[in-house]
Structures are given as C-alpha cells and as structure tokens.
Image (cartoon, rainbow, N blue to C red):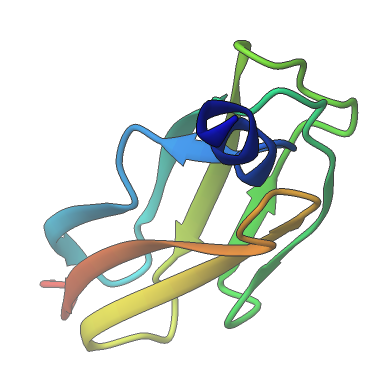
Length: 117
C-alpha cells in the first residue's frame, strides 16, 4: 500500500531540464546569442506549457505549443539581443505549465562588452 500512495503523489506531468542556465561569457554589445534548453516530461501525464515569459524584451523564447507526452523530450529556444546592454546580464525566462512544479526558470548569463571601433 505504501508504494501505491507514493506513486500517486508523483502522478502528473513533471518537467525535467538537462540544464537550467547557460553562461555565454563575454559578448560584444549588439551581439545576438541563443540557446536551446532541452527538457523531458518525466511524469505520467501529458505536459502542457501554457506560457513562457522573459524578464525583458531583449530575450525572446519559443516553446512547443503541443502537449509533451510522458517520457518524451522537447526544446525551448531562447534568444538574447545585447543591443543597448552593458556589463553582467542575467536574463531569466519563466516556464508556466501543468507540471508538479508549475513555474520553472531558466537563465541566459553574459557579460556585455563595449563594441570596439
């Protein structure tokens, strides 16, 4: 019986990322960088991502609009435009879904250097 109770507590969609942060290091102001965050639905129900929101307009995410079946993987592509930025940047992207943890975060980190002439 204890096993069944434990199995029920883990029921539902679970989003598991391979990584939650990427550091691009130094980039030149005006550069555009992007990264693909891969994840797997490690739960037992379809995962539905309802929204993905970035902390600023300089960061643009794209995500799967269809449900991700249990055991399947998908990707969230995130692009960062460093135009008008300087110094250390940490762009956070929030992923809203029906997973057991309904809000997950991934981040793009960079150090924007002035463009040399």
